[in-house]
Image (tube, rainbow, N blue to C red; front, side, top):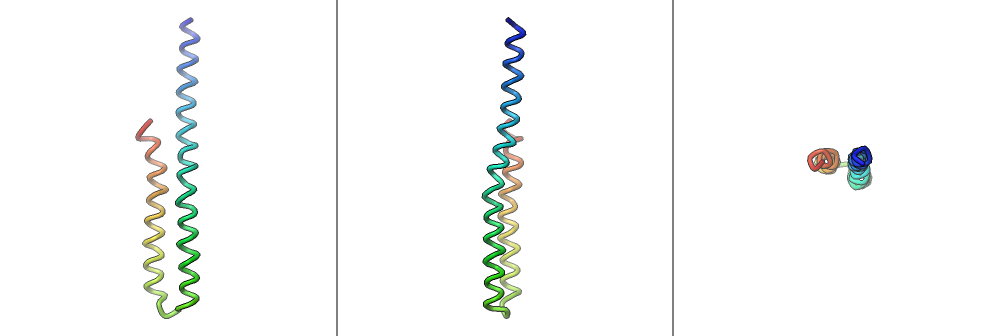
Length: 82
């Protein structure tokens, strides 16, 4: 009987670890889409107004950094709560 309980406990640990990986994979979707939108709209804005390229580039990198923070939080949170 006790050997069965050990196997059940090991299965629960494996499932918990795999759910953390799945959670990070899902958490990376949002920042990936956000980064694509930020760069796409920035390129479009630079093509329309080349004289404002410096301001647009600054805002582009700020938006990129904020989206990347979300991806890093998605990587760290499963480790904190496990």
